[in-house]
Image 1 (cartoon, rainbow, N blue to C red):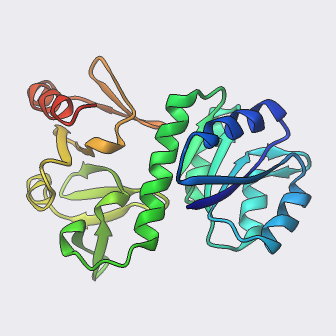
Image 2: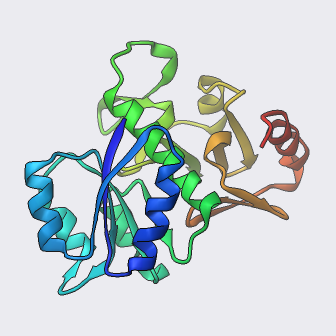
Length: 233
């Protein structure tokens, strides 16, 4: 069970989060707050796993509030403004809910939270769940559920992760594809690889991964849609 609270001055948003959470078996929304001071006091007495918080609340920003907690809490920021998304992800937010959001978008967010929560709390040593790469003279072990997408930068690849900074490694796209399960990851463009379960929507020849949009290359279009449909999305 993932225990959480929501903090927002907008009562409509709090009511919406409450309604959506009530239908999710593994989420326990303990309390909602319109006052960040009261929320902070509650967290000190009642440890939580997940925090929903607006980017602006009373005299605080949600970023200041979260940074001051100094606890290992998963955070999802909600906001009326697109421009704060980069700052949210710099604080390792698992997701950024741009208002107004609907049930479909909320469920996509919760799936990300669930994946990240399971990864953080897993006790398995199954090596097939990990990708090993060399970066900055170290061997890095990356959980596959953390990977948001992979892009190529000349001779390097950049692995974008949920809730963490990207990892840069000297490797070709073909080499990394050979290391990934082809039932879970697909190359959609000469410059991009995406995990199928992180795709939020596909419109025309553009894949949406939250605030990130990935183009589908013409030569890889048929293979992508075949894999996408096969997975039942």
